[in-house]
Length: 83
Image 1 (cartoon, helix red, strand yellow):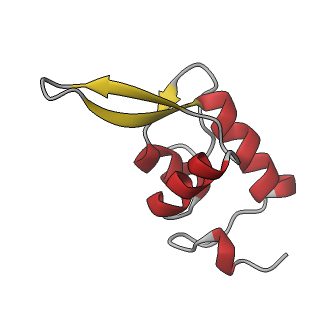
Image 2: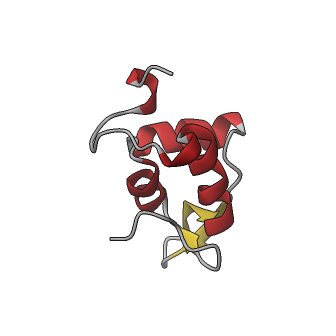
């Protein structure tokens, strides 16, 4: 998988979490708090909802969380990364 999100597509919470190297629960919390902008879409016969996050938004958050190309170790949550 590439390290930079493509600006031209949208991502699920799990996909965005992999790019941002945080837990999916962190991405969901950021969505609810407004730190990441996303849209809820409905799918399936039961009309379930899921978040979709634009690639440019994932890239914006990457530049805030990991300035100047720094990357946290895989599996780490940004709350545990000291600045």
